[in-house]
Amino acid sequence: MRKVKNILWVAIALALMSSCSGGKFKGSSTNSVSQATNGMASATSVTNASNINSITSTSAEPGGQGFTPCTPDPQGDSLGTERLVQEHGNWCWAACVQMVLKTLGDTIEQCDVVVRKYSPSMSDCCRLPTRPHCDVAGWPNFPDFQFDADTTTNQALSWDTVKHQIGCLRSPFCASWKGINSHGQPNGDDHMSVVCGYKIRGAEQLVKILDPYTSQGAALRWRPYEFYVGDNTRIHWDDYYNIRRLSNR
Amino acid sequence: MKKISVAVAFLFYGSARMVMHAQGDTIISKALIEKAIVKFANILDSPDVANFGLKSIAQLKTLKGGKQFKRFGIGLYDLQKFKQGDKVKDIIQEYQSVEVSLVDERQNIVTSIEFTEKNGGWVVSGYGSTSELIAVKNAQTLLQKTDLEKGDLIRIPSLNLCFISISSPAGLEFISLQDNSDLNLFKRQRMSASDAIFKLVPFALEHKGLPPK
Image (cartoon, rainbow over all chains, first blue to last red; front, side, top):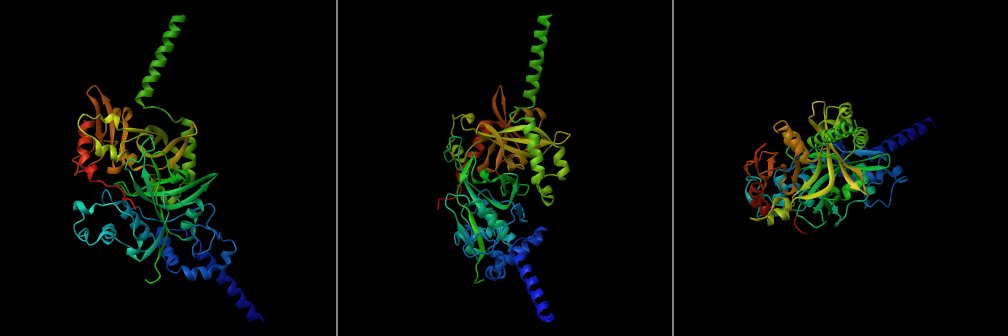
């Protein structure tokens, strides 16, 4: 009887530990990265391990699609995403892919993003990245790096989805905007940045945005959610989210 | 006696206007800035402090509102279309946003908070500096104090460039805030606004922005 009791206690303890690992990993950036990688690498097993969480899960979570059911921290969460600067004028998208994959445990070069997207015409862009034809804009193609992602169309992620990306999937995501002039017309100032945190303070919902476009390390800002959606200088374009490692890797 | 009072009042008003002009326009009230600083301190996580240009959260609480930078920008399409005879001031767009620099006791910019007009009032739209305010911060010791106080910050996001614009009898002038060898620009370089824009046009024409899907 005592033996059965002990086994039961161990089982309960293990179940509790599993449920925690499906959720948050706070601490240093290094910890966040490695833990996030583990979380992403075995989405199925984490799902199985966190049945306890499913009781409180938001099953209608827009980012759901077979991902770990979990409840993100209602107060906020933040990933230790490294601030990386885009290496060329048009490479915001490449810098964003680099920052996201680095958070998920993979180190790549920005030129790799360009080369893989546009090869063979850009195949020399890692060897000679300053050649003018290499400074090209584009949209992320995560399968080039054995990852996949979902995209929105001219739309920001909902607040719940933002929380799910950061708090449950432990993954930053790429957000993009179309620049507009003061009359609301497109002005060509299009841009992509990385969202890597969320927070609630009082009634205010905030997101943490890393803008790769500066010479001193990506500019880090907290912005109210409504200004991530859009502001008087830009409207929302497409976001790349639910970024996950392809299982055949 | 009445005449003296009126004269003193005018003198006081004139001095106040001069001080206000020297410090740049005040759009966001001191009370609103102080409230926003408290919120900023409440949002910041200790590990992130250095990434916001700060030494500590305690330091943030000691900062005061400095120069208020109204948001002025030049869009990529306007740059690409700019030609001889065009006026630079006609392509500068003003947006209803103000980035308030937060300064230390030496008046050095440390970080900033952005406000945007909403429903007739001002609300915080960003905690921490935009890349252009970071450029101002990095160039501030090289700039003349009066230029920084009187000038406007002109942002050219598509080329990751910004300038301080100054109205002078000779016309609009731009002061570069960045070193850029490709464009032959260096910090503190002063030139006519049209010369600056003509330097940028060829680069703007090469810049494509994110392609349509």
